[in-house]
Length: 154
Image (tube, rainbow, N blue to C red):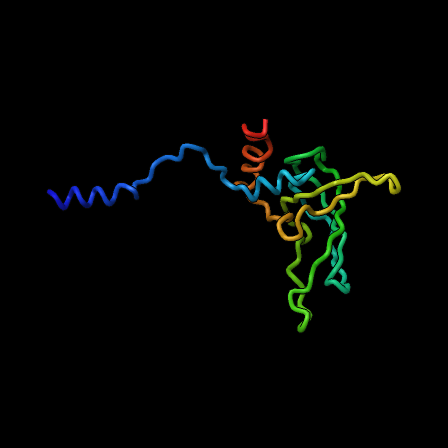
C-alpha cells in the first residue's frame, strides 16, 4: 500500500489538466493573416518564371475563387510580381515554383494603391509562407479562427 501511495504521489504531476487560459491553435497562421490585407483562394491562370540575377522573376495572374479576408471579389483577376531565389549558386538550382498553372492556392498578400499607375499593386506578405496549397482545414481555420479579433484585441 505504501508503494502504491508513493507511485501515485510521483505520478500526479504528469496527469494532464486543462489549461486555465485557452491557447491559440496556430499563432504563426494568425500572424500571417494579421499582416495580410488580402487572403484569398485563387486559381492560377498564368505563370512563367524567367531567369534573372537573383534567380527568377514572374508576374503570376490569379483568379479569385473566394475571398477569405479583404475586399477582393469572386472572379477578379490579380497580378502579383515575385521572385524565386537560387537554392544553390554553385549548381544554379532554383527554389521550387510557387505557382503552377491551373492549380488552386491560398494566397496571403499586402496591397497598396499606386496613384502613378492608377491601380492596386499586390505583393506576397511573406516570401516563403504566402502561397499555400489549397486545403479545406486551412481555409476553415482562416475563416473561423483567424479572420476575427481575439477577445484580448477588442
